[in-house]
Image (cartoon, rainbow, N blue to C red; front, side, top):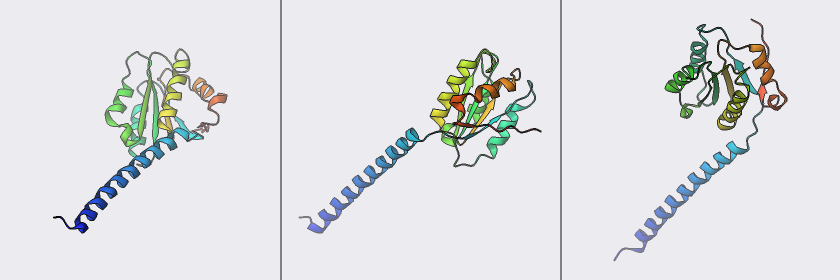
Length: 167
């Protein structure tokens, strides 16, 4: 016969394990709810622009090496061609588990032909990532003034923080 103390101890271990599992599930649900309900406001937004081959992707990769581990960064990459090279380059080096969320807008300049696709991709990226910082790499053929105009639209004014800086 098993002593009563052993049965109680085993029962307590079982209960403790169940409670620990429930706590873990609650934490997971709370985090998911927090992510759903968190309003996106004043995300520092950086447009990394320049002509084709000037080093925009390299500049972003350098910025990513200094990303605080507790921050979530979103990168919106625009490719003029149908096949995205830069977005794949980022995706190959950084993952969402590392707090880096990447979305591509292929097939045209985001300020012109891809204006609506850019807005859709940006909206999806903001909702998915809930970023602490947003980096945008337009194609080297893009018009920075038009991109800023699109990002200054009424529906982005509260969500994005754009600050003009002269070199």
